[in-house]
Length: 301
Image (tube, rainbow, N blue to C red; front, side, top):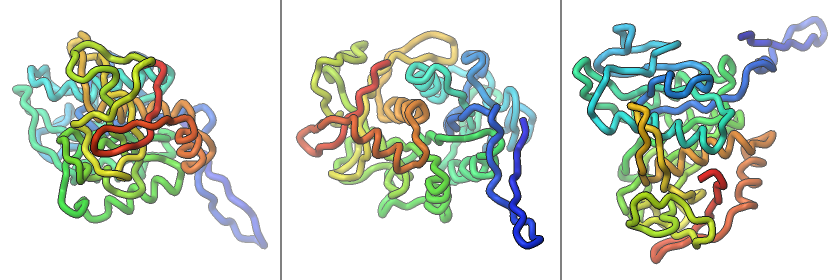
């Protein structure tokens, strides 16, 4: 991989211009989550990262980049399937997408996950900003978060997300599944994220039914948020891949967020605003008894 730096000669001075990505580096989605096993997605993983604040990465340190970095010991803890599930959705929506799993969840040798928080998400965003050009990171997926009063986030996180937006890289975030109709997760509450909620389409409570394009989309009651807090609502009912290679039916705003990240990459325009507007233009109305919003149909769901 090569990074090309362009310079302009003006009256004898060399002025550096923002580096551009080499043409042979395909655009990638950075997935800040639980990590995965790259062998589950042959040909789709651009690189892997482990960035944890406890336990250890596969190299015995708190940071690792490269092959195998996002993997972890065999575990029976179901929550550790989360990153794998999201990547499987992304590759359903956009089969040619390149993925960069960034594992922020510590996993101990016995397979037990450790604690993590938004500080770990912020550290992962630091890595994204530092390596955006190197790996042609075009979308960032954050399906981690929690509701905090007054949209509390770590100092500097809002600025990170704004800086990525300014270079046309969206941070696509999940609003959360708490059924809170007055707030959304941090960092989805930040203005410059692309905040994603869930529709329960076609029939809430019927396990295994993923999608019926003839049904009217209905905003899931579990999807957090009041009016105007969510940018887009997407189908959240998917059959997803597990770490053991099996398939499982799941629901949630994380699923909808993964679908949007892949769709954004597939349909991106020259700028953030152009892409956002073009997606908005193909949405339809959706609502429940609490709020209304814009629903995006994903054919591959």
